[in-house]
Structures are given as C-alpha cells and as structure tokens.
Amino acid sequence: MWRNSRSCRLAKAIACKVSSHSWSTPDAYPRIYKLGGFITPYAGDSTGFVEKWRKHLQWADPRYYFGFGYGADMNGLGAQGDPRGAGVANPVTYPFKGIEGATITPTARLLAGADAYQAMIEPRPHRAALSPADAARELQAEVRVGRLDADAVEAVLAASGQPTQRRRANVGGLTSRELDVLRLAARGLSNRDIAHLLTITPKTVGNHIEHIYTKIDETNRAGAALFAMRNGLVTSDKLGAERP
Image 1: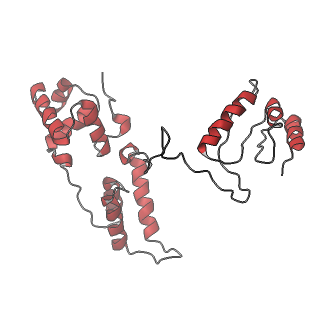
Image 2: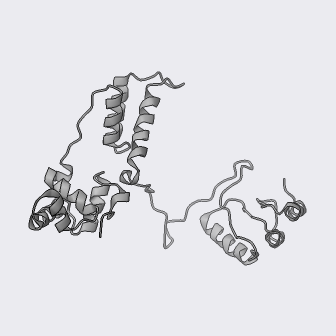
Image 3: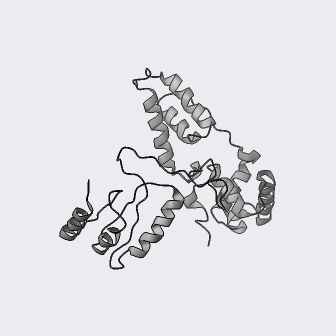
C-alpha cells in the first residue's frame, strides 16, 4: 500500500511514475504531478472518469507528459462502473462492432483457420480430440456464420488432406466478368485502364459498372469498393491503391 508521503518521496528520489490508486487524496495529486508522477484513480463510471480527467488536467505539470489511466487495479476486484445510460445524448449502443473480416490480412485469416483446426484435433480437458472430418465440418460451420474466412478454411482443409467445398463464385449475383471489373474499380482504376487490362472497350466497362451498381444496390464507386472489401474481393490495403 502506497502512502501519500511515501509516493512523493519515491517519485522525488528516482523520478519514477507513481500510480496513486485509491489510497491517495486530492491534496497529494498536485504534488505527485509536480514530481513528474502518473496517476491512475480508482475505477468508476465513464461520466465520473471524464470529470476526474478535467480536474487532473488542471493539476498536471506542463513540464511533463500528461497521461491519465482508466480502469481498476486488482484490489479486491472492485466493482466496475456502468456505461452511459439510455437517456443521455450519446448512449452506448449494442452490439459493439469490431473490424470486418475483409480488413484482416489474408495471412492473419489463414493463421486463424489453421489455429482453429489444430485446436479441434487436439484433446482438451473438457472434450476428446475431434476427428479430422469432424474438425472440417466445424470449420465449415464457422465459415457459414462468418467467424472464419472461407478461402482460408479451404486452404487449411486442402493442406490437411480433407475434402473441400468450392466457394460460390457469383458474389452478389455478379458474373465472372463483373467481378473482374469490380475488383479493378475498387483498386482505383479508371474505365479506360480497366478496358485496357481486360481487352474490352471503355463503354463496355461502363455498362458492367452500371449492372454492378444495380445488383449490389450501390450508386457510386466508393460504395462498390466497400462491397468488394466486405466480400473479400479486395483487401483494405488495395482500395484505391492504383488510382493515378
């Protein structure tokens, strides 16, 4: 347990960062900051955290970097604060959304599939090891609910000698040629550039793009590019990558 005087003496002696936790009192905070200390108050609700941050920002010494920690220490696993209520201007809404699969690199998607397969065929305290065939079925079920990438799982199963299921090629009802056009358009190529690469006319490219918009219910290239990314037709690092 850190006492106020001990915290200040320690900071002064070795110029370290001091976390006050809940044992310090407001009169000690300015002294800790003056010595270059770092303060992490006890956990609380988000509104109270913002109020504390504003007070501490006034106490902070401009000679040092200012940081303000949020979260509980492990002192008895103290209670955590609730999120903002529904009656505020900016309520917390659920479910929270993480990054979409298309923003994850192909290598990371492949590793996720391989890791899941390996874990399934190994015994665990709560279950026996799955057979390769059962593990393959579990992986394909994960693909259907969107937790694993289809191409990555196909590659993992092929490498393990398991039968694979060919992925449906007509994403969004698009033809193979429309998929080719969409991939190139999402990478930022002009109609003329796409026409040159696919050995068709710019007018034909324009017609394909209009058909693509209709089928995927988008009205511009930005929306079409996002559609391509969400469906794994192009990764986020390639969006607009070849735009002049």
